[in-house]
Length: 92
Image (cartoon, rainbow, N blue to C red; front, side):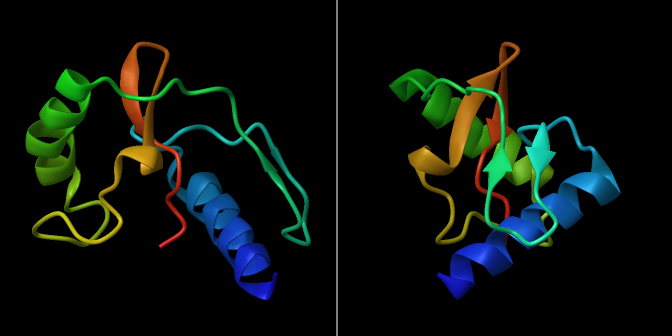
């Protein structure tokens, strides 16, 4: 449970500091880290996932301090919101 609280607080901090359009926006997050509310982002299709792997992650790697996809590059960490690929789980 403590890891989840820490993750929620880190996501809230990252969103507040960057407001990056590649992140799923946070609509509300409590100060203690018990929950984060984001808009619905539909799951990626196979084609969208392949495109994201090549385009979004490699180009966006600088933002996440990465030079290549890492263990968090999983389909469930990304979705489509407002017709663009966004990272849903961006705690790390």
